Image (cartoon, rainbow, N blue to C red; front, side, top):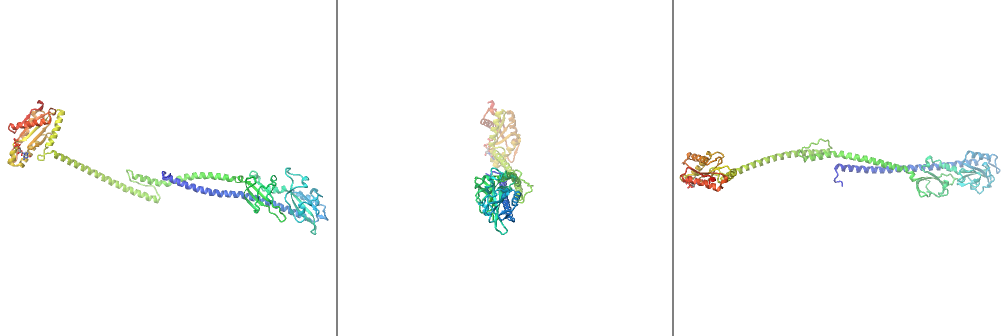
Length: 560
Ligand SMILES: Nc1nc2c(ncn2[C@@H]2O[C@H](COP(=O)(O)OP(=O)(O)OP(=O)(O)O)[C@@H](O)[C@H]2O)c(=O)[nH]1
């Protein structure tokens, strides 16, 4: 898949992947840490609040308990079993001062109310009430309960909810320490719940924060709507805890709980519980995760661009080297790498430049060698041509007289005859025989005979125009082709000229030598070659017959 990618693309992919992985790991680690931190903040806040509520209620109960204890120790509250005269006013004053007191009263040792705020329940028998039973021995705080006797006598703030109290009772003793009665205060349950609610801020509803007061068995005491329900299994051994718990409604809540701090005479076992739905509590986390994903995406884009830029930057020197290597294969292999490169690549660049210099030198040498070779080939070819020409000339030249031989004559005659046949221009043919040459040989020897033949050839050539053709036909016979003659008379004149030239030449040591000539004027179209030769030979024969050293021109074949 990657093998077709360029080096730059591969590096960009590698850098991009690496950056992406680093980002992924970093964002996961950072995200996990931040989520853990935010979760801890949510839990810590819940725990702090529920702890504050617990402390508020504990402090309130302790203060009320102290107040009732102090009040019960008022000297001479019950004189000889009867309330002192202004006890009624004192109880009313206390209630007026602390509105959480619903009712304050003092009962005799036989359980009859002797004095009470607004004289409510005075004379009533309370001997069966817990507060009376337990209050006779020490200060006692009772669990929440609905109003029994007072329910019809006292106004209710919330019609939907029954009047509920907690009781605080303390023994009333005389100066000897003997029990004279029991002082009891009914404290509004709503005062407790307000203390609990007070730790919730204005945004509690929007954040769906809800506070509970539960007894030691997890039965809900507050809020009223869930009173008696067991909404949550409490963790009995954990006085202060916070965590995500499944509630009875099947939903998960971040739940903080704190056991009520109690004094010796207090055995309520309440737990204050504060809960918030998990999805609401961790909503900021979801927002955070979205923001983080967006930031990671943007950073990944930037990283991808950065990776491409780095890949391009790193690839630049390699691209320069690759271009230089490409140029090595070009016509001009001379490479100059001027870029500033890292040391490792600079070594490579130096090697390429050195290779370029060597290559250039090698090419120059090769070029020179080629030129030299071409020159030699040319010279050899020329020499061969000359040799061929010489061979051809040799093959066409008579070895003794250096004029053309019979083969050359046959070839020339064929060409001339054909040309004449085509153009209609006549040519002349002379056949020349050295007279009585046998005697020369016999008398002077063959070598002298040869020199005579050579001299005859020279005289013939010297007497003719350069354009005329002289050949040795064989033995002591020569032939001449003449292109410039147009009539038999002209041909005869040339023949006579040749005859005279030989006749007048002195052949050393032979002296005079004569030749006989037979000739004919030919128009190529009028006869074939064989006829032309026979005609000239016939004329020569006639010249011999007439006594030698003479010229005979045969009649032209056209006239036949
Ligand atoms: N030295 C020499 N002699 C040659 C050569 N070719 C031919 N001869 C001689 O030339 C002579 C020709 O003799 P013949 O044919 O009898 O004719 P002739 O003696 O010239 O007499 P006519 O032709 O009748 O005038 C012969 O003796 C040949 O041997 C040659 O190349 N060199």
